[in-house]
Amino acid sequence: LRNILLRRRKRDMLPNLPPVMSTDLAINLNQEEKRVYKGLEGDFLKWWDEEVKGNKFAVQLHKGIAISKLHALRLYAIKPKLRKIRSLTDEILERGEKVVIATTYREPAQDISDMFGTSQVCYIDGSVSGLDRARRIYEFQNNPDKKVAVITEAGSQSITMTAANNLIIVNDPWTWAAKQQTIDRLHRIGQRKQVNVINLMARGTVDFHIRR
Image (tube, rainbow, N blue to C red; front, top):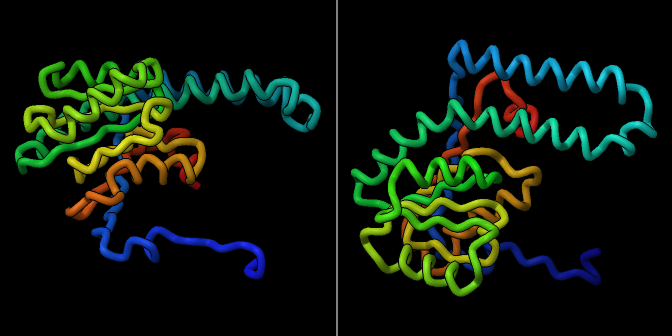
């Protein structure tokens, strides 16, 4: 393929960009959270064994149901992370830096936004119109009072957030490419600081399976 394709890596084209430092942070569930999560997980595994396992046609037939049940597991795994997000964000703000908090889902994104109040939050999900999205991004990039950006995967395409050099990924997207796109919101032309990426994972949940 080298004879017909030209592959250009970002590190080759933009050698002066600062580095990306990625850290995994495992979060423990409390006893009640473990009980609820194990119940959801047990329901999924029981359904899989009874309806799908060993039947390749059933895999295709029930793909939508399987994804829906996995989404339920992923959403619940976010719950214990909310406690840590607050303290992590406070530490970043105390350093005088901005932070972007990214998640796949709108519901926890709204909950995270509510933690900090509208005065310092730039909130963007897939429902935000193009003009309003551009206004919010401009504010985050230029207003020192807008210190926290909360974005969903659907709302984070083709935006620049180089005013921040800290990224908290609440849950990994389904694909590596989608995750890299999220990091690239910060790690692009205009970024002058090392980009610090914190990957949150809930112990004993689907988070670890997705990472593998």
